[in-house]
Image (cartoon, rainbow, N blue to C red):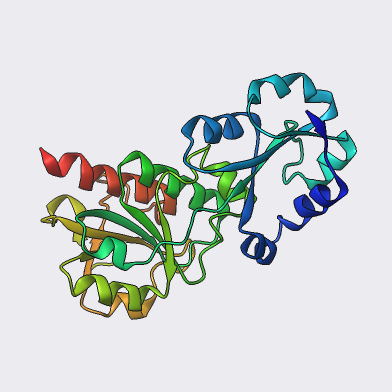
Length: 259
């Protein structure tokens, strides 16, 4: 273990902002369990682990890694949480992957249309990984998947599936040309119940913005709209949380539909 340098502290402060994360191709994983899972998974390169002075007794758990000690006051300053657990890691972003790498494959991809809540995005990423999604496409207006709150919400699952980005309409057109079926989660009257949908070998499941749902341009494209039916008598419930709806839909598409 060693003391963190001034330059490292400056970097930690910068990485709370998207433009610096993109410039440095680095992001922060915060929290004891989240850091442990990222290290155990081995899917993302951990550059350094930073530990607050009060927690330096835990440094031995990260043998083989560059472990740096931060003054507790500095740790609280660079941490994203109100009550930090005293452990965070700086990790390298995975290399960008082209859409074409997936267009020729089979499977299921999740796409987010302007999902803005970090907790929702992190949960969607984690759930997509759990159900074996090939990738996640973060559409324009979606929160940065390397935002500290998103990373924390994935509970260590960051890096477990590739993340693509782009304008969804343009991305979908490319995928549809090679046989991908786009399913738009929509609660409107025209939407087909998800339980009756005949699934294909190539599916893109789209979940929309927490407040306004899926962009009208995507809805009016002739693509299939699907909905999750409520139990009888529960129609007064306006809608499901975006992450919850995604979880139910993924369970339906990957589990029930196979039986």
